[in-house]
Each structure stands twice: as structure tokens, then as C-alpha cells.
Image 1 (cartoon, rainbow, N blue to C red):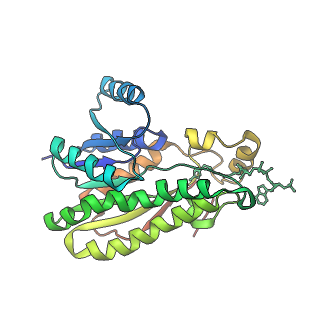
Image 2: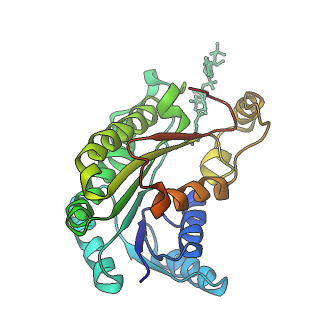
Length: 245
Ligand code: CAA
């Protein structure tokens, strides 16, 4: 029987590749989205035309109540969630001097509190059933910090703290919790950085290019699989050598 995977923010640059990789590895895949329903319908139709059936649920991941409702809908559609990828994330970059409370809270709520809201819906069930995979998407900038990203770096470092703690709680129950820390990947989020700034960043990547969403998605599929059962609480960097730990 196919396992059920839920990817938050699955319609974004990384998320779309993750949905495809998880379907290719035999999962039934659901995603959350925010924003307008027309775009979501268009994305779902395009995916379907490429052979990828994804169940899309509207959910503001910053809201605990939305998370409750969304996971209930996924469960009704496909059955209980076996694999949760906490991928939804935003940037509100700015030097700390200029950073507003709104910028701080938007990023902490979307990139960190969302992981609590979503994981809370599925973790106990995973433990009871004796299998589960939680994959938290962090960032190179949660590992090394980044000028202009106090909010984002804090949230992304925080999400790995969540992984390490939950990994210990799930370890004896077949539930693994791991973090992926992507570097700069060729998504809209990275393309939104001013070109001059972006080019300087790319110049500091030993591999000499931006990463590809598929390169992150491949690791998500591995972490979702049975093969990864001995890996838990790990933080896996995919950053073209930009930051080596
Ligand atoms: N280290 C030290 N000093 C730096 C610096 C750095 N990394 N970057 C900029 N500065 C300096 C500048 O040289 C400039 O100095 P002067 O005033 O003496 O000229 C000063 O800081 C101000 O810099 P900016 O002109 O860039 O300031 P700004 O207000 O116009 O822009 C910013 C600030 C929006 C944060 C901009 O610097 C920026 O976009 N930085 C990149 C942030 C980034 O990497 N975001 C990642 C987004 S993608 C993502 O997050 C995905 C992921 O996980 C990787």
C-alpha cells in the first residue's frame, strides 16, 4: 500500500520537485497552499497533465486551526500521513536595524511555528503506527547565519532544534525526524535577491552554480524511505560546498 506524504508549500520552487519525487517513489502526495484558489487549481492541473496527482488543501500553516483542518482533509482523502515535509517558508530580508516586528514575526510564524502546527497533527499517529518520517527544510543560513536574515536564520536554526528533540522522542517508535539544509537553489525565492548581491553569493559557491530543486527533492525521497531508518536527528547540507561543517 502506498504511503501518504504531505508537503507544506508544495506548489513552490522546491515543493513542486518534492511532490514529484515522492510520487515517483510510490507515495500518495498531498500539499498545502495559501493564496488564491485559481493558481492552486492551475498548478494541480499542470501536475496532473504531467502525470502527477497531488491532493491540494488550502492551509495557512501559521494557523494551528488551519493545520488541524487541513490534515483532517488529507487523512479523509488518503489515510493517515506517514511522511510530513515541513517545507513552507518565506523570506522578509532586511538588515536588523531596519527589520520590523512584522518582518520578524512573519518569518518566525511561517518558517518555524508552522512546523509545530503541522507536526503536532501527525506525530502521535506516526508513533502509534510504528512508522513515520518528518523532514524539516532548513537552510544554509540557519547553519551559518546570513547578513540581512536575522529572522530567517533564527527560524531555520530553530527548526533543526525541533528535529533533534523530536528525533529522540520518535526513535524507538519507527519515526525519524531529519533536517535538510539547502544552500542557494534556483527558485523564485533566490531569484528575488538583487542580481548583484546574488552574483556575489554564487561566486562563493565552490560548485559554481545554484542548486537544482531536484537535488533537494532526491534527498527528501531518500529520507521518506525505509532505507533511511537509521538516520535521525541529522542535518544534511546540500549547498555546493558553500558551507562545510
Ligand atoms: N557581509 C557584510 N557586509 C555586507 C554584506 C555581507 N554579507 N552584504 C552587504 N553588506 C554591506 C554592504 O556592502 C553595504 O555596505 P555600505 O553601506 O558600506 O555600502 C551595507 O552592508 C548595506 O548592504 P545593502 O546595500 O545590500 O543593503 P540593503 O538594505 O540594500 O539590502 C539586504 C539588504 C536586502 C539584506 C541585501 O543585502 C540582501 O538581499 N542580501 C542577501 C540576503 C540573502 O542572502 N537572502 C537569501 C534569500 S534566499 C533564501 O533565503 C533561501 C535560502 O535558504 C538560501
